[in-house]
Length: 154
Image (cartoon, rainbow, N blue to C red; front, side, top):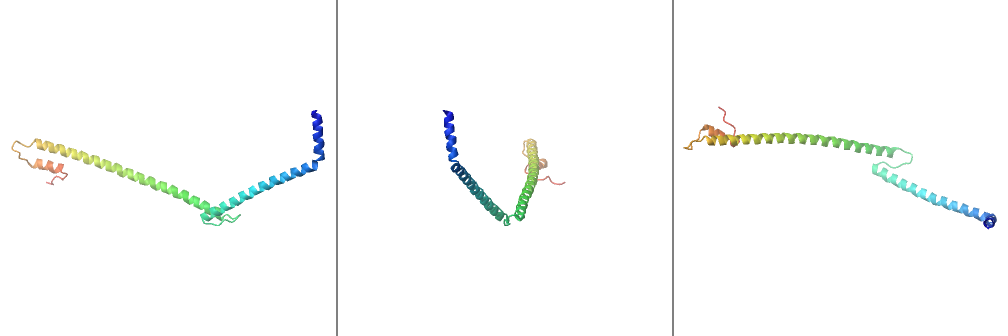
């Protein structure tokens, strides 16, 4: 039974071979036409992208000419160099700021130590004041030192 069906099928294909070949060629033509349209659309999109890119770079797009490509490469090199130099300048500024912060911290620590020492000296001078509440030159020196004044030159 299967052989009979195959025989009938081959017989029909043999009789309609011209139409089947025509259909196959038409299908192939349609497939080629569709892919050609896609390729043209992609080409047009690429050309529009090249025109916009080259216009943004400041050089007109001319097929086969390297002027636009050179301009884009020079702009990319400029951006890369600018970013590198900016990073270097920022690193120097951060290092300078860190140095100033360290110096300020050291100066603040030194000033705090001096203020503490001055307060201790003032407490010692107050302890030496007698029962008659008379103060001497050492007490005034301690007071001046606590107030941040320099001791007198003698």
